[in-house]
Image 1 (spheres, rainbow, N blue to C red):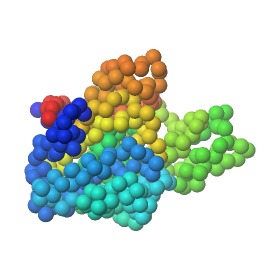
Image 2: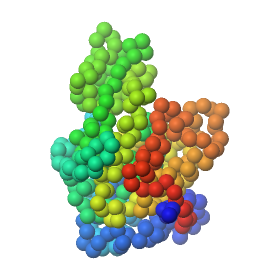
Image 3: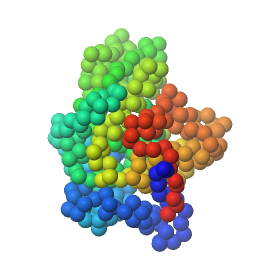
Image 4: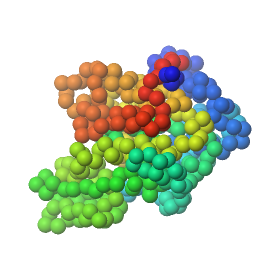
Length: 368
C-alpha cells in the first residue's frame, strides 16, 4: 500500500496561503497526536547549519512546528548531534552558539535547544539492528531517548550522498561522532599531480591526518577518520576517495544508521522536508551555492523513504537552474544531484531503505 506524502507548494497571493499557514496544515495532516503522547519530551531534529550557511531551514518555520507539537500535548526541544569534522558545531558549546546565531534561540522558537550527544559528542546509545553492514549502531543519546520525534530536513544536494533529506538527517544527524566514523569508515588519498599545496585540507582536518611535504599534501591513513571535509574544501579536487568501491557500502551504512535511529518507535516519528533553496551542498558547508532547481515546496509524511522519494522525483521533474553542464539550463526531467555530483549514487538510500524496512518508495502525493 502506498505511503501518504503531503505536499504544499510555494505559490500564494494571500496571508491565508503563505508558507507558515501551509506548514501548519501539513502538521495537521500528519495528525501529530497519533505520533506524540501527552507530555512526551518530543525531539525536533533539525540541522542548525554550519556557521556561514544561510539556506538551512528557517527558524520561523521551526517555530510553527514547535507550536503544533505543543498543541498535540508534547514538550518539544530542538536537537542535533556533534559533527565529525572541525567547524562551528564540533562540541556542544560551539554548536549552541551557532544555533543561536542562526536564529534558533528559545526566544524565537519557544523551545530549548539540547545537543543530543553531550559536551564532546561522547554520549550515545547502542541500538541492535542486525543488518548487513552493522549489527549495532551508536545513536546520540537524547535523540534516541526521546519518546517521539519530528524530523525536520532541508532537502538539497550532498557531495557524498548525492542528496540529503529525511534519511540523511536521521543517519548522520542521529549518530554520535562514533557513529559518524562508523558510517564513513574509509580514508582519502591525494593525487600529487593535481595538488597545488594550498594547505586548505590540512587546516580543516580534525585528526591532523593531512600534512604538507615538498609542497604537496600527504595523508596518514592511520589517522584519517573519513570525515571528508578535506574533499569539500580542496579547490582542485586532488583529495579524493575510491568512489567505485566505497560509495555503495557508504550509502548502505548511512541508511542502516537511519533505520537504527527510529527502530522500535517508528509510529512515534514523523517527517517534514523543506524543498526550498535546493543547494548542491549540505548545510554542513559554511556557504550556500546557487540552487540547482526552483523552490518546490514543503512535504511531510510518516514514511521517510516515501518522503525522500517524492522530493527526489519533484526535483528531478523541475527545471535546472545551476547545472554543471550549462546546456542543461532550464531543462527538466533529469537527476540534478547526479549531474552535479556524478560519482555519487544517491538513490541507494531509497532502494536500500525500502529493502531493510525503513519505508516504502511507493507513495501517494496529496496536495494541501
